[in-house]
Length: 267
Image (cartoon, rainbow, N blue to C red; front, top):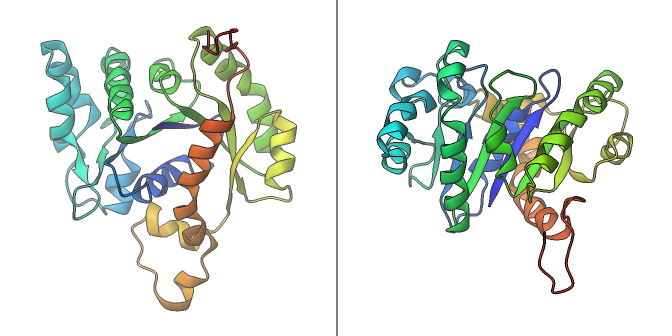
């Protein structure tokens, strides 16, 4: 299964949520986290892995030349950085800096095709697509997904900005005949519930997660929580349950632009 997460404004916590989702993916298959934000940098390498290695050593930009040679699958595997001791979960770190987005633009299509093939073969993929609006935004990584999630905080300004920017997401998904249903993940940082935010955006609610900076720091900063602090963390408690919601959402929702024919097929 391939899940692409994005934001429309601000920093609602897409990267932290994508990492938590990858770490807690079902353990019966490999999971790859792909940092595709064209702004660059790697929240996972700098935060969760605490800068254990230089970003230049492993980066999505290092796949551009192998893709031109037809060696993308092997190069992709070589660039993955393990996030767990058994190697089941790995991350493809993002661009080293924003200036590489122009070079990487030719990679988004072939890489999305590879990730889709991996998903069909049984692997799980989580894409951190960053904030919509960049000139070289990785739209192919979004349209190839099985589920697309817009991450929004439950604050009036964030909801207003999301409403203004959703048209581009809808238009791109429909224009590419994407099979991915679009839903919203609400970070409950304000006075509104997840259902209220989803209703305001006219999107189905994919998930709600608590605004728990202490618990989220275990993923965003590689913090070590223990004892009562860890047991009381609503973020840490919720994170392992997210994947079941993703699968249920993919099975129960279908984009409006995909019309079922009489024989049950989808066009």
